[in-house]
Length: 584
Image (tube, rainbow, N blue to C red; front, side):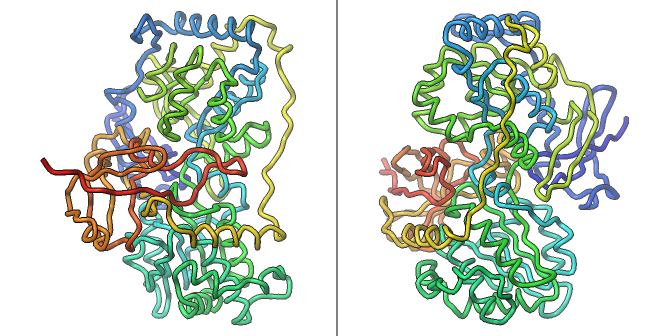
């Protein structure tokens, strides 16, 4: 038996993982104590990711739909079937009738292969599916690395980083307890696992993080730690009004500002879940501004959820891919005849009746899939894709550092790497390839400008202060054993057992008012869905707020996945009504 080292791409930390390999089979995980920046530590996702390779729902061979059912097929027959359908639709409806989606759990080389394939077809309708907070985070600027936590005397966390990025927990705890007087502030509407270790938990109203940061920036200036280069818009910030909307006191922010600015070394960490922080680009911009303004030794860590999000963002912007929200809008508007799904499960990440109907109405859905999923069930042809563990490549982590690796094992069963599958499809297309290739037109999202900061802050303040339409504010909950929407990790037996869905968190005050007991079945209704769930009554939440597992596709549908006015998906909280289910 051999032990081979590789990397986990279930989050952007790039932890080193060891695999026990017997011949061509991976038999389980192995601890690698001397490896990587975390000394071989991995979270539950990394520890159990080997389950994916031999999972009962693994797409082990290509499949072609015959009548109502998908049947196993050879690679030759499946590629011929998919390319024949694709050629006919391109001939009759044009290349722009084809849309392609992929995700950031691919190597950069595989993402580049997707871009090349789109140019070969002649379509510019390509998107990388990610959690809604990921794209604004990576587009807002560079992130400091893990080393910024070393010897940090003050750490400010927005979110529940001990759950979203569990391996960082020991680093943050070490920073807090390294010396008397070190501090950890946690800004979160929920008394989270991270908040339990905090010197002070600042329980803000959901969606108000940017208001807290703007007030913090002004407070840093007040303690004399900010230079004249600070944008003058800060002078006009009405921190009293912002903090009133956020539900926290001015003295609390002043204490946090004094600790952060006065530390020789400090870090601010933004680690959001999918839905809870309104205007993620604004949050990221202000977090960076606080770190820059507070002087030397201050750093900002921006933590998306996806493994190769920065690599995906670079590829997407260089090749002028669409945003996933724009592509979904076009899908629902009936623009496309075909969706080619490369490794992602778009129906689980952005669950809505409108998207499901749009996918069902297409002439064809073709997928390269690791596991059987919601999108695969609508497909005419399914190609069996290998995971990153079975193919070499590279990925850009949250801080821009690049990992490269070789395949730990050969592709399992009858699977092929994404790059190989795409090459087979390219070879089966009819027209000469050179005639279809289009030059990419690089473009990058613009950062939040100083001239718009005040307007965006006011928009957030108004949103946070407005009455909630259905009575309850809904925020999404992450889990240490689940990644994002759970479309991949939800299949791991251990993760499903230890981090199940099917529940919502309800505050003790709301449970008492609604006659709801812990463990009761409740009906949760929003403008987009109605779901039955089990109530978990908790003291972690303020009255009027519910917690919804973002890794449960049924409950995830309670959030609206209709793009906002600026064309992106909201990252802010949702709204819902909770009623007790009538007992028989």
